[in-house]
Length: 127
Image (tube, rainbow, N blue to C red; front, side):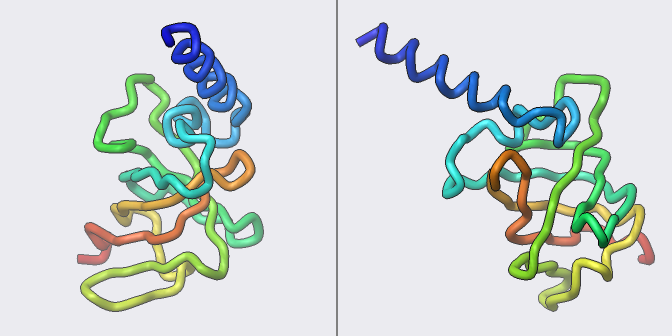
């Protein structure tokens, strides 16, 4: 039984490592599950939005309720047409996000990228 557990752990670790550098140093934590059905939670502050790449760059404060341990706390999340942005019980477009907005993101591993399903604005930079 112990050998089977070690084998599963090795598979998970190798799957995490295959994420590449897509998400900076926190990519392995965010993509800790190789499953596209198990979501992860990321919280941080928007630093930039690249609409052509459909990418939001963040200063990450929490991943699955844990602070990243590395000094590089930056990462990227990706969005698609199904990604919802919510703020004060209203829905907005991803392009309404601004640098400095604090967000909480629920997303999944999508072929080595962290794909946002729902983005909740927890603090609007304009208020």
